[in-house]
Amino acid sequence: MSKEPVAVVGIGQTRHAAARRDVSIAGLVREAARRALDDAGSTWADVDAVVVGKAPDFFEGVMMPELYLADALGAVGKPMLRVHTAGSVGGSTALVAAQLVAARVHRTVLTVAFEKQSESNAMWGLSLPVPFQQPLLAGAGGFFAPHVRAYIRRAGAPATTGTLVAYKDRRNALRNPFAHLHEHGITLEKVRSSPMLWDPIRYSETCPSSDGACAMVLTGQAGAARSPRPPAWLLGGAMRSEPTLFAGKDFVSPRAGRDCAADVYRQAGITDPRRQIDAVEMYVPFSWYEPMWLENLGFAEEGEGWKLTEAGVTEIGGDLPVNPSGGVLSSNPIGASGMLRFAEAAMQVRGQAGDHQIEGARTALGHAYGGGAQFFSMWLVGDRPPAT
Image 1: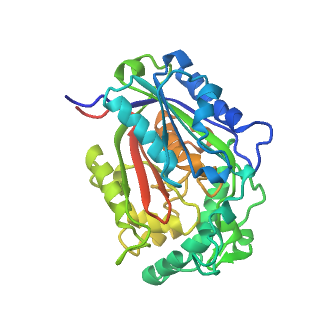
Image 2: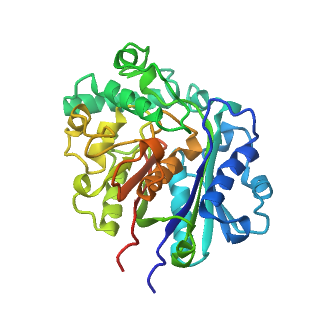
């Protein structure tokens, strides 16, 4: 039996901020879910199941929050699944929901992911104490900075690349009313002169710590036919993982990321991603990961990713816009960050991205990664259903 085509018919996200003290975790999640249902022209009665995702529970100190969020969401009595794959969880949560629809287990699924980082300290939560690691780093930036330095050496990239990415994404965020960071006075010089945190990563080249949530309504052909506006269609989706550490691991271009992208392209019939994909929402928590992932995802040859950034190819006006929403560099509710990439990709092909809409976008890639560059999830969406 063939799979059911999967359509994104509803998208909702919250306003992202350093601290959403106006709502509880439940209120934050309801805000995104309500907007997704309204966008789909649906109510909770139309939803058959819920798939929820977030980063580790210790980020907020609320263990297994899905148990009470079922009641808070109005989803009592409906099947609910919880997904966790570190920072990639928002993407993998959406893929689990999509698989339930594709397999015809459920007709319509609401998927939601969130984080309320203001109720924790994620940076120090990700800093392991002595004797489990050397006291040489703090937070995710300390872990990833050596891999960035390895990329710079391997690719011969100039020191300016990271600042160009950050400057681009922060300017893009000014077009996105939901983005956390709206730095109206941002200049390239301000990025370049910001404090060095983890060499070569500067303060303005890092993601913020955000409160926020994202939700989507996924359904099959019958549900898509009832949608009040054109849906985004899932053309390919995949997850891959690998250990954090093993002999021969390539931290600059992880095998799991390359394999995940190749699987998505195979499903979607993509043979030249640079030419056939119109927009990319890429998980870039530190600016140097844009050129690194451009190579990992097959948009550039090894050692060539930084050249696309330097040439302006990844700008909104370039021929491969990357993170027109402002990306993770501008909004980072960790549990939802991957789903935001998937949702923003769907918004592009639905033509509902507002001031950061890419003209004529018909295909868009959503990408997420997490852990020690060990978990990857991606999907490609288009404005037309997949060929049967």
